[in-house]
Amino acid sequence: MTARDQARPSSAGPERPRSSRDERRDRPAQSAALIQLGERLRTAREARAIDLLRAERDTKIRRHYLEALERGDPDALPGTVYSTGFLRNYGRYLGLDAGDLLADWHRAVGDAPPAPVSLAPVAVEAPGQAFTFSPGVVVAALLVLVLLAFGTYLGLQLLRFTEPPPLTVIDPATAVVEVAEDTTSYALRGTTVAGGLVTVRAPGRDEIQVSAGPDGTWLTTVELRRGENPFEVTAVDPSTGKGAVKPVDIVITVPSSPVEAPALDLVSPADGVTVENGAIPVKGGVTNATEVTVSAAYAGPAPGQPEQSPTPRAPGTVRLDVGADGAFSGRIDLTAGAWRLTVTALGAEGRTATLTRAVTVVYRGLNVVIEIHDSRTWLRVSVDGGISSQTGLGGKVFPAGTTLTFTGTNLIELRTGKESTTFVTVNGTEYGALGRAANPGSWRIEPGKPPTRAAGG
Image (cartoon, rainbow, N blue to C red; front, side):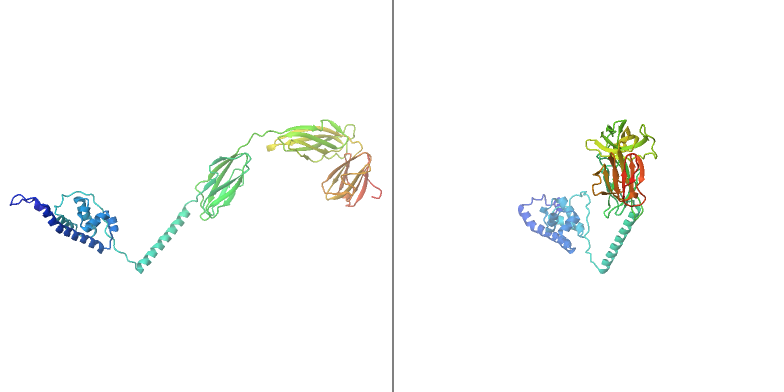
């Protein structure tokens, strides 16, 4: 009996209540109708080769509710309103007439259709048709893939030719960096396009260019000076000729401590000293200096002595070694006359300290300076009858540019392998080469006399 029949008035009087015996008698017929309705649903689904998992995904109805509909089991459904909504959507999804399904359902369960309820529409996806592959479809798909790949390649190339190359500086990590005071160079590292040409510029310096590797990384070393060192880094893609949007500016600062001027203390020679030979000892100490030099300028003849002709030639600058404690010592060889010595201490960044001394050289006895010019020469020298330790008994070969000084009282004898390369100065008087030819010869030098050839020499 349907709800409509229950609502209709009876001419026979009030309807008597249904007993449990009546409900048991009607349930087999009701179950058979629901099972038949469920079979229609299941048959329609299987005809479309749709499994319950796909039906659940497409209809958004849980699988166990779909199974309950196909079993004809209303007790497993949430309620009349939801059950009829599920049945309506599922029937439409399977291509069945939803109105017929709902009517059969209400007749089977023995109730009247509920009042319309506004439900949010549920999107139902129709089952897709099975797709079959054919040679034409495969060829068409391959052509589409080839066209897509070619279009992608053209797009990438176009993008490459229109976009500037990237440029990144990895080290230093910041645009402004300060390094240790003793740092003299820095390795710049970064990335750009593969094979990109990277240029590093700094004011007053030659620009540096380096090519990036296949992975786009680049590395170059720059020299640093004290203070701020500004650098500008740019990059160009050689294949397109395009440069980076803007350069990367870097400032590397090398701190500098105040530079103290060197201090110079001269122990010897004393100012105004007179010596009786030309070997002038120079001794003293310095601070904040790494080098000491001594030079001399001729100031005229010694007091009481005539002017020399030609004017004595000043020796070259002499460099003296400076010890770890700042002490220095050495000598400078001078001829007869008045001289002005200049001692200079050289410190950091070109700072200097200078002292001068007046020195007079008045010879007593003999002072002979021998210089070797042009080529190496063998030489043996004796002083006042004794062999000089500078040459030894067998003599010694000295290279060009050698200067030797010998001091004696009455006689200095020398034998040279090449007279033309042996130049002699006696007590400040220059006599030049002993001969014009590169021949050996023996010579005698005595006070007040020029060198003379020895007998048999």
